[in-house]
Length: 139
Image (tube, helix red, strand yellow):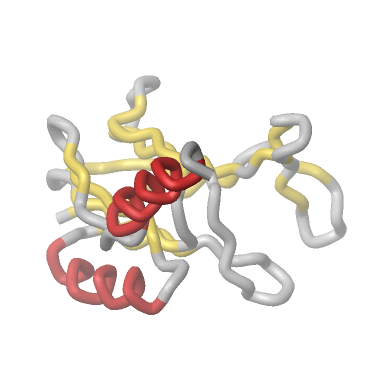
């Protein structure tokens, strides 16, 4: 019983950190936040949305259900090196990048095998392992 009490105290001390609100993160040229699972996270995203230039929302094609854990990469147009590569903690990612041309790539992995899931066309045939949005202009 004595060993259990310190462990419970440790968990209680860590609990507030686990419930902390999401915050905007920064790299040298890009700021971002991915969240949106709970009402507190959606509130924070709503407050931050006017401060960013890109808003990416992950939903299923057929039913429109929200999806998290997507791998998101942001590239300056023509660049092979991503400015940002994150695994989305929620279905929505707010991104602020300097003015310019960009492309976004997003994909999902099967957790059990870490295999990239295919993107399907309207007939259900695989066409790629990621979705590409090219030609984005940030002003």
